[in-house]
Length: 258
Image 1 (cartoon, one colour):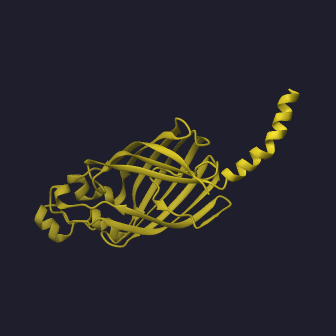
Image 2 (cartoon, helix red, strand yellow):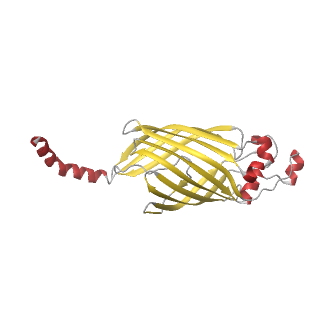
Image 3 (cartoon, one colour):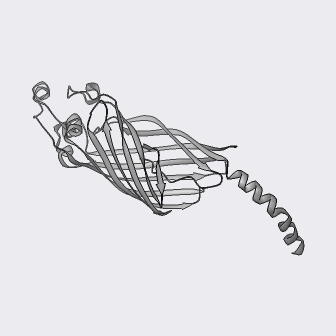
């Protein structure tokens, strides 16, 4: 026992110096996989798409929690559990051929805005996003959600929580509205939705590490269109109020020395 204590005392300064060096390094975790998700907002068909993730942590600090359906964001303000910064997203296009009728195209939309979130501890998080389409639907769309989190450092992280999605009239009319011209061409009734809550959802995510280098991650999400979106003739005739998505992939963690 004395020999063990003596060896520990001799090694402690060297270990501390090494730890200090490690804490100046960065750990990067890259993930790649596949996911299935609706072809467009309100679709009843699924498409296969790439599923990727990137996380960065300093030294041996655990990776910061991210829900699988978070928009891309960069925290500019990060203090006391509160984080705020710019956010962005890409919303897939909707073509007439996707729907099977000339209901109106919506171009691939680049959305920019901001997010704010608060993490009381490692077990709970609340987040809100508000984005503006700079092209495509050109509307405002946002979400408010909460996550219950179970984690053991980076060994595993599991989360589940509700979501409320809302949007303005411009967004809802792009995806759910039927203009008189479209009504004449398709036989659908004219429909002019207003803004408000358009969907409710629940999302869960899981990541686990096999070892220090390799791991896996995945998610499942169910969304239900509500309000004016759910009443849309486009959704009722050509789409679905039920929106499912899920994905899984493998990740690799490496260290960048400084």
